[in-house]
Length: 262
Image 1: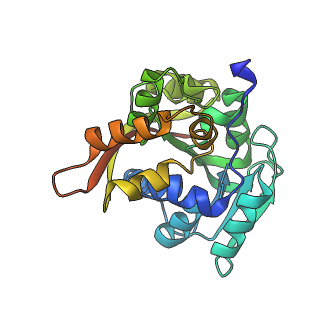
Image 2: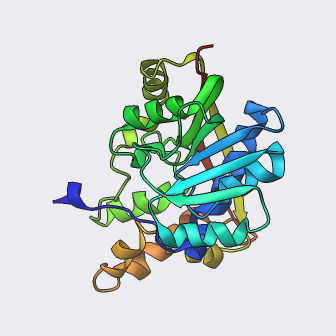
């Protein structure tokens, strides 16, 4: 059954080209909105290969950050990337964070909430580990609204009869759902923000190389029969490439933040 299929991220380097750069683009805009106070203790839930964790260290002057993720391969990449930073990484579950109550100033999920089996439980865990007055925040692609960076590729695959493999709970990233989830966790001062970013690839082949490495895309591309992969590639080239050969993609994420009551 399609519902049993899962998207797993087990290659930190492949993730970097496919999604890490996108994560930092959206993360930069997200941090502009948050405007975090320097010297805070952070928890990065679903930290993956450390793309957003690195951004936090660079931009937020963190006291420390603890990243958690289910993939040892991704964590290994993150540890190497942030070897000299005030960051620690551990394998774990977003719905059962291995941290004490009120042990952080802020908890974040970057492009993660639609992978959490029970998003409300995951956000409640983030609220548990932050202190009174601390922040709980997230951003995630607006997949149902067409905001995913590789939406055009998925749309063209669907036209060839191959339905996209999306994260299991794409609805969790909708703006109304985010507000409801944050409110249900007992958070106050809940605010949401649309985040729009662009990435320009030097040519179509660079875009194709990044897109085709995605864990939800690569297995489907390898399963295309009898020249369909070539048809798909040419359709995308015609659709995306500008006259100068470059490919500029716009993506949209939904951001949310809230505060644990004092």
